[in-house]
Amino acid sequence: AQKVTQAQTEISVVEKEDVTLDCVYETRDTTYYLFWYKQPPSGELVFLIRRNSFDEQNEISGRYSWNFQKSTSSFNFTITASQVVDSAVYFCALSEAGTYKYIFGTGTRLKVLA
Amino acid sequence: GAGVSQSPSNKVTEKGKDVELRCDPISGHTALYWYRQSLGQGLEFLIYFQGNSAPDKSGLPSDRFSAERTGGSVSTLTIQRTQQEDSAVYLCASSFDSYSYEQYFGPGTRLTVT
Image 1: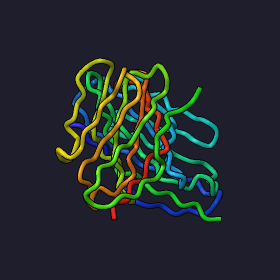
Image 2: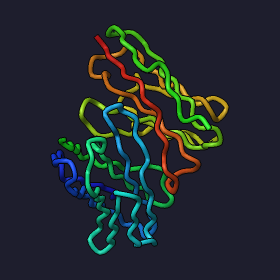
Image 3: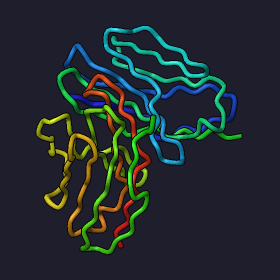
């Protein structure tokens, strides 16, 4: 069965600190996709990254980086030198090949304090 | 191009009334999803449309909820005889195809049932 766990309900950091948001997934499929979305206070979910199960390369985009490890079924998200504008709820999601359903985690609320 | 649009942005209705929520997906996107997000909660899948295939309604919480998608584009989510527990933000998303593509979300409709 598909499942996405974001164990961190809320994280608070001080601006300029690095922070890692954890995502652990469960799937029996060998082909699947993982996603991260950001939901700022305005409410609209913003797509951040998609990763397929055959590509374990880590990805860096500016201050954002993602660490995909199939061995631990994790797809963690790190923000380097956090800023107040990073304050949002972040969702991790999973979809399997051959199914249309995306399974979202419960989200992690990140608060970056000035 | 334009993103996913939803209307109205806010809707306040009395208990027992019917409401219609509208979603305009991104042009060319064949997959359309409806989710519900209660205050501070994650995303609850409601229904999925893909091209001309029969929709998957397995996420609809009761028979008071229904949705249609006309001409493979615009979708309407209807809630009949609204109850207070229906109060939530209703999010629509579209994607180029299913499972392997990221979803793009609309701004949501905040429904308040008094």
